[in-house]
Image (cartoon, rainbow, N blue to C red; front, side, top):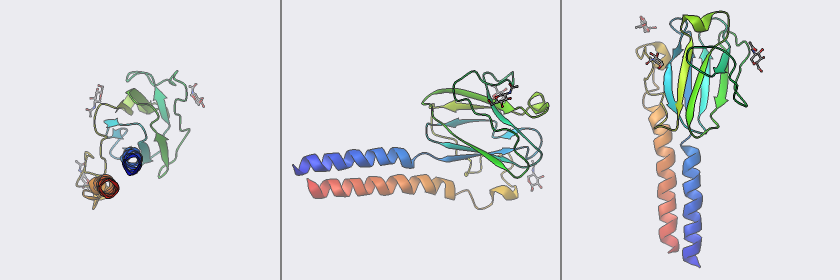
Length: 171
Ligand SMILES: *[C@@H]1O[C@H](CO)[C@@H](O)[C@H](O)[C@H]1NC(C)=O
Ligand SMILES: *[C@@H]1O[C@H](CO)[C@@H](O)[C@H](O)[C@H]1NC(C)=O
Ligand SMILES: *[C@@H]1O[C@H](CO)[C@@H](O)[C@H](O)[C@H]1NC(C)=O
């Protein structure tokens, strides 16, 4: 009886670990020219991708290849509409695997290099709080280097420690 309860609790905590490991991935748009920074990155189901417009107007549009900026034919493809300077657009990853291509559909931005690639489920999510930006000396990154790692690390560790402690108490 007690063993069954502890196993059930451990399973619940394992599920919680899955939720706490989803992260925010911030993409800087047009920070140093018409480009996404980082351009190519890795994400996992449940991650929230946040595009932040540093300069000008942009349209974040899912496409079907890195060489053509046309609306994706996939169901539920994302499309931000025009987002002004200082605005942001968020998209939560809903797929377990595959490649998401996207581009800026505003004016001729995509032809000037404003396109990006997201690889889903091939490894740890890219941590943009951890100085991954091309300009890590820039003011936008100050004070973020430890925070991003700690956010995930502490979340998982606390959950694991609690699960193990409760498991031992009940056995
Ligand atoms: C991103 O991937 C595309 C297509 O493979 C490639 O052309 C581009 O150079 C990559 N960008 C970076 C910064 O590695
Ligand atoms: C792409 O899809 C969006 C959203 O469905 C739509 O508003 C936009 O007009 C489409 N663009 C083109 C070029 O068809
Ligand atoms: C990085 O940002 C700093 C401060 O904004 C700037 O002075 C520097 O020129 C940038 N470096 C590159 C490589 O763009």
